[in-house]
Length: 591
Image (tube, rainbow, N blue to C red; front, side, top):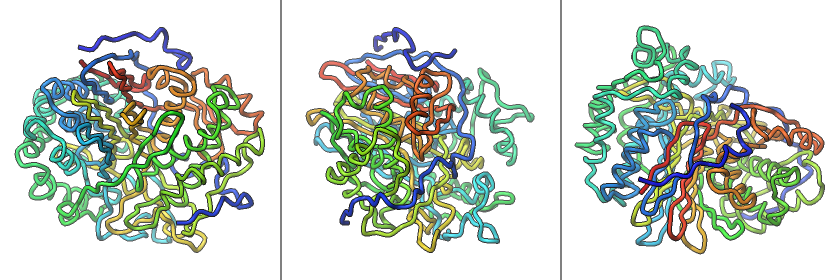
């Protein structure tokens, strides 16, 4: 087993207990003030306490996930000589059982994969799609007004076509080493024999019991006899075991066609008070899309992420590309460094909210958004004053869209894996809201990813790039990332957190590169984010020491829980170094 090295302290962090360029028009009306709308008007996934995390050292392989049982499942596969793709199947399927509030077989994901034999990096878009019967007015009421968030989420209306089974199969067919059917032994065993409910799951159930009580099957599982599941209690899921046994024996078609697919469709279309439009055709027609990665230069690194329909890789790339125009000393852990980091993020979010959507439906100017010339120009906005930018606006491109935020909440999970052959996987996976739509079929929860679309299809007489359309994939902020150094993989990283994912990933990379922190310290360091003008500071941490200085720079500040879930692996010439986020219950293992 890997040797572990205890952090000398939980460091300074824990003091408590996602076309032609015309340069940005600085005279535009500010559409990104400190007024918080959309997802930010809703309570995010709550904190569930801190866990002690230790930096993990290994020499051959490593896996990091958000739950110890899932990490163990991946470790066992790697120990048998499995590839990163093989281990991912075991980890993801286990997460569907033991961390059901965050991801699972009823959801979707984005994956970056480095093939160390071919020396190639590619990405896989396993994002859910809108049913073919969906219309742009899906989330408008009878008066043409946007629905309230939870009215849209709970039930069948919000369910997109589940993608995880086909995504896992697609990646395994390309990169798998072990037989497909052997990858599911751990989740099947845990489902049959039972597993201990983790503290995080128990707290999440308690926090969401009002919505979990709405549908009898969901209530019976998470609220037995009307009582929320308790931490440490043994939980079995025989229906899940049956579904996964079919998946192991027949492949993804088992859950995308036939009786299991019919179960999904029946649950969605017959959801009390809020039925959806998902059909058997939607399930059987679903396809994973392979897309090129999005890469930018940052210091001595090439930082590669997921392109549209995720905004994560583009926004992280923009933030780092803007900061790359400043020296590391200028981007320090001080008020000036935080000003640059915060306003670079605001500029990235301004572009994100106007231009990002499904590239198969809208022309997304990806190359222009991450071009060095454009990012250099954006960086010059930060040089014009030593105060916070009074306003920000999207850059001007040929394509005319209007800004519209979408409701995106942070119930997501991240997996980082390096196998013995040097293959690297970075995967961010989600069912969107905590417990997704709260509908269960085949023993697992179904996503509510359609609420990641903008509820309003038209604003100010212009179309919204992220509006609902049949077969379209909603915009995401998921940012699975692989960082390269001298042409070789150096880091696999990602996080849950809704639109805050972008800031969590960028902060961790900056902390490791510019603030000279090891990876565990960089993960544990206080979260400080700025998306729309207000600087968010993680409560109970030394981030609060910067509150007055940031106020003096002209920012409004918001002290709050910022519950990242970063899982990262550093790949050095002679060893692997892993870290997990103390804000969740993740684990790193390796040999």
